[in-house]
Length: 118
Length: 155
Image (cartoon, rainbow over all chains, first blue to last red; front, side):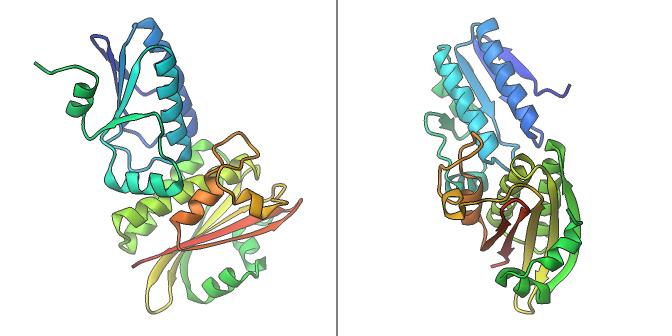
């Protein structure tokens, strides 16, 4: 089955979404991430969506739900790299991703998670 | 259910009548599975690019298409979408007509309210996509199906 890879770096989990996600793939990612937070005792999750040219209500909800599930499991989620056109569309659609931490890029996202590259 | 191209001719709403005189090429895309939605998004993106819609308008149209396609599958039990290029001599546009043979919508005003859902979603599909396009029209017949017509014009 098609899956989006989840990388582990210390107590962080990194996900880069590089495919045009259909709904089942988005649900699989949500389940996989939640499971990996527990298995790897992760404290932070960084989701890079810079390659996504669309975030609709389904993908938006998957992101919100993942962040909420991570929070309950004592992990922080940061979504990074959203394209400006996607941000404009998302807000006009009525999705505000309440409760989801965001950062402009991976570096700032890592900083937000309290990590440094040095 | 008739094929989309045949069904489209049976719809005589104000918006469809207007589009009929200015539409150019058209294609039909089936909507049955998750993968069909991804395929449609690509097709719409190509059409939007072809008439040089701005990146923001492309994104809005593709996102609206994604929402409406999901509705067609989830609530309408699947259907088809007709993609049309519009050209009225002054400007170009892309029109999408989503057709399903599902139960239709008994209370359209309620269905267009932000946050209202009959299926456990966020309730942004219809109301949200309406905000993302320039033209939006629903023709629903309870028990027979519905047709959602949208369009985005090049600014």
